[in-house]
Image (cartoon, rainbow, N blue to C red):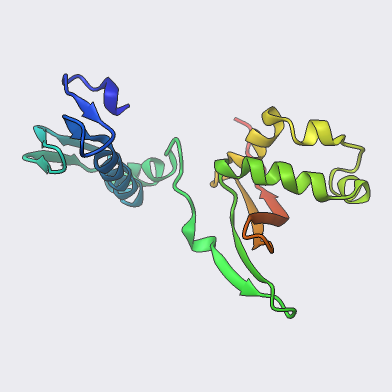
Length: 184
């Protein structure tokens, strides 16, 4: 997205290159989008002009438009991609001393989910899905991408993660809640 801006610029991935360093600019954009999502009272925001040097970014002028009181609820729920729900991340210690992190699933958890599915028994698979579900289908990218990339407004998948003896993170459990959507 940064490279497709209307302004011709030289982009760099490191401070050693010429032009603007994309890393800090990308971080700024992510933080800015989180602020917009967290503020349902913002309907529209324009920054013009926006100046950038290698690592300095300055918004010289901005305009904020707020929705009417009647429209506020609608704008708060029409976010295309909802923010990651950090409030559900917890760490707990089991009676045997095992430390688990329980958190909402993320799209980048797909490789961990592939390894998790390889460890569960056919009886567990049948108990969860109520029919035989071959491992090759459970670990297919098409399936796992749908299971890992979710809309946090309508569904929640919590994964329990553990660091194994060789220091790798692994999923040891998954729980999923799905809200039934009203048909329009």
